[in-house]
Length: 342
Image 1 (spheres, rainbow, N blue to C red):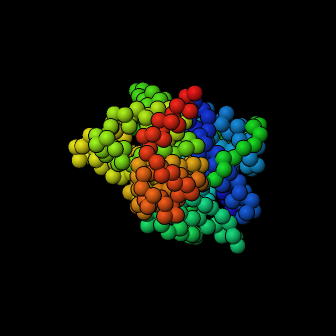
Image 2 (cartoon, rainbow, N blue to C red):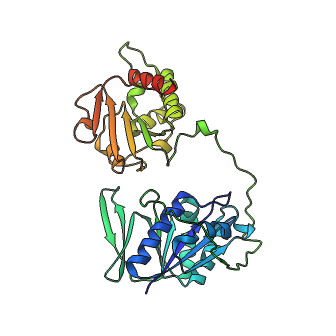
Image 3 (tube, rainbow, N blue to C red):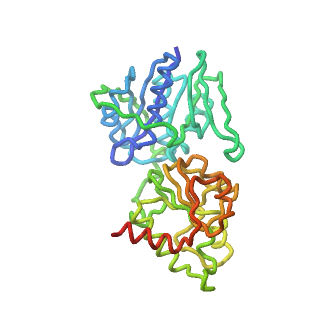
């Protein structure tokens, strides 16, 4: 009987992020498929209360590290806490969310406990007494399924690939695992947090809609002039009204690096595609981009894809989008913004 361990962390306010609840759901399913025993571990501020919030998941035991040393993400203390939790659980299979916090510290923890680790896992299952994991290879063009005999085996699960666990809270009676943090572990300190205003944030992983802008927004329009300023106003207005996340084609973000005038709020962080991100949103709307394969490959996990382009023969019209609107994106988004603000 495999010992399944769901390793989670809290946010600064003590709550569990959505990615943690998604990983918990994957661990619950894996334990049911393998007949294994599930243990849940939580580290971070308010760890005990977070364990109570998921007490109804059916885990046999809950363990925590809620020391003030792990209140903020920090490699040394997070790695030490994760190591202690994995050892206390006697874990064989460790599932953890592939967040920036765990992606940074868990490879070090895996080395300390002699574990194998794989990241960007998109599915985990137990068949025939063996645990199998899936992840994408070769620029997310090949989906591979694999297993390992080495134990412990750590799997960092990508966000958005499992439904978040939902269930009753309760009393977890979590056991606090002692960790001897040294002064050296805690020499890095958090002085404060600088974050953009909410309406200035353009990357929103939990948004329903992904709005992708292409280089066509910066080209000369039918009056023979470029209207980059107007484009920026329209796009930002749409993002605010629709609460959408902003993506970009590679050609658009490359314009900025070439010294050409472009959208000031766009960066390579927004790039979607073979050399960018592969987001997961319920809906996607591409505007002024042609849907070439390297860009469109980043849309494979968007459930409903639509595009606005003046060219009826663009790549989106070749089976890459559910609906293609042959229209001027400036006119379309102007009208849509008016409707959204009505």
